[in-house]
Image (cartoon, rainbow, N blue to C red):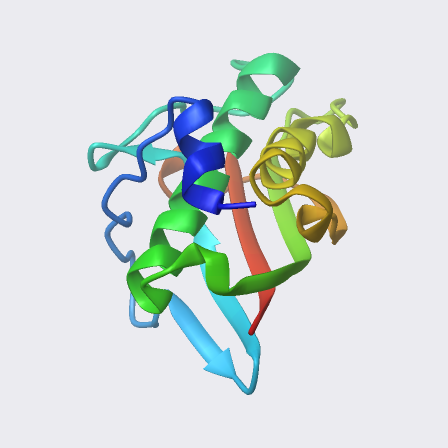
Length: 152
C-alpha cells in the first residue's frame, strides 16, 4: 500500500509544513522512532478554525480541524523523511482540544485525526492515543496534536 496513492484517492495534496511557533524542531528522531511537535489546523499560514469546541465550534468542526492537523503532521514527516512509505507504524498520538467548560467529547474530536491516519496507513495507522481537554491553545486554535511514529 502506497501512502501517496491513498492520499491521492482522498484528493489530498500535502501542504508545506506549518511555520514553527517557537524554539523547537518540528520532528525529532531517536533510533527508529520519530516524534513530532504539536501541530495545529493551519492552512495557508492561517488557522482554519478558531475557538473552543462545544462553544464556537461543533464536534464535526473539531473533527475537521483534527484531520487538518493530521495532514500537517504528515507534511512535517514528509519533509523530514522524504518518503512517508518509510513509516512502519503510527505508534501514538496525543490530542489536545480547547473545550468549553461543559464539553467532554474530546475523544470524538480527535477521531478526525485517528480515522484519517487509519485511512492513509491502513492497519499500520492504528495507534495508541490520548485526547485531553484544555482551556486554551496557542492562537485560539481548537486542536493541537503531536505524534510518535516508527520508521523502517
